[in-house]
Image (cartoon, rainbow, N blue to C red; front, top):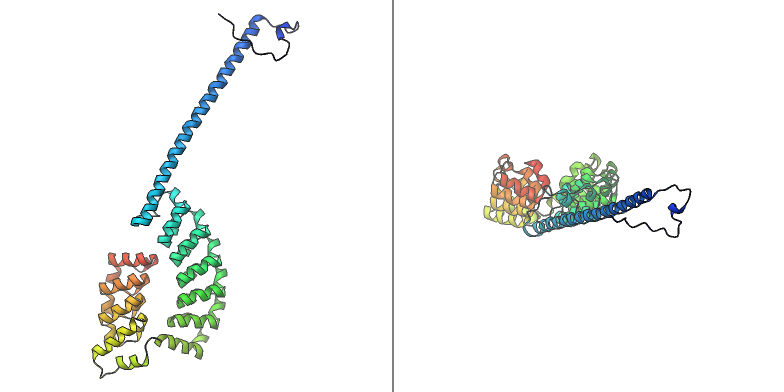
Length: 347
């Protein structure tokens, strides 16, 4: 049996030539065998590690391909057929910035199901609130305290002011943007700004009903009351008022005048005689211009599915004014929620 190759000495004196070493030939042979075995072991371990690393990389690439396919399918569902559901999406997709931005651009309220990480992302939140101001509710505290984000939200829907930080509810620029979008946003302004005449005037100018949320002192203020009166009658000219309340005028003439009026401002239905509030043609024209006009329609028409569907497709919140039967109608509720997710609270 041939001896294994001896290890290189690199200029060192062989230990067996050292008289004091006391090493026999067998000792030398054993050391060589052990060292060679150690080398073979190290080489085998290195090969094994290299093989395991290759296997890991293969698995990693496979997962990346899987994720890529899942993401591609999600984007197709968002942009093409609208079947994508953020609520049912995987955690990976909920944390994918591209997918989430695409989803909230189609439906801002999808922000509710985004990862906490992306609810902190200003770009994602901005995309959501620009589509639906109420998406502000699902943004993190930092974004709800960001003036740019909140102004974008309240410009889209003034009532989103409810979800702004307390600090920004004290910000006049933010509150003015909110009440100019929806006068009733005044209810969410700070006490100080509810006592600001300029803010109150802007709110009442946008919606006469906003006066309900103003302090009593403004309800007695002549300027505010005049603005309230102008807003309430702004789209009902004296000529139209004379025509629709003229007891001698033919009903068709009154109806014709009222239809023209509510097509400009559906809320003018509030000032129509009861007979016209009970006329489907007039009410349909009103709710198609502003779904909130449903609140002024006769009870019978608040129970008319065609009228209610027209109203909630225009303003989801109009579901609040529908009859109980209509609030129980799945098709009506779905139409309202599709327009505005928060309409569900009226179902």
